[in-house]
Length: 166
Image (cartoon, rainbow, N blue to C red; front, side, top):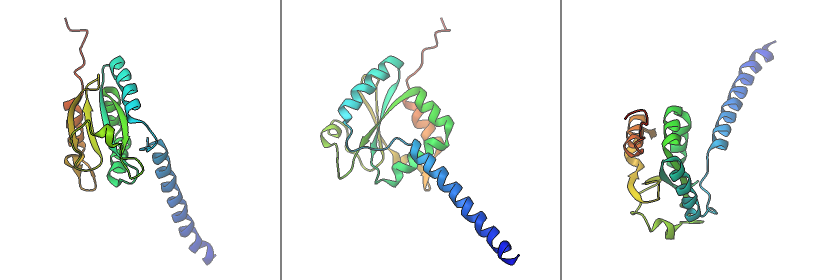
């Protein structure tokens, strides 16, 4: 009986840990990863077609799998459905890898110098550069500030024309 009393809390802790690990794996499996083999020129061309067809702007999300803050930014969007939905409704997001395997230097030379990662570039629906965003200015503690990210997204979202007004 004493062994059972001892084993129950241990079993509970193990099962709880497994549940947290599965949730983390689930979040990680949903995340679009930075892929060194992807071609950002081609991805941007596809994004322009999509953005023009949906009247959205484009966000280039530059970073790498090595970057803890890149993972934190992705996690932030997954955990804040309202912000994630707003971003999906207003932007086409293109992940651009920057890593030792592929720095995408030729592609990134078309944009301002990046001070740190992740970094966001906002482009118009036709792919024209509009804004360079240092994500360090969106941080709060070991994560991101909801107010700062919302403000950034609202500032750069396209104004939607309300067809009911005339």
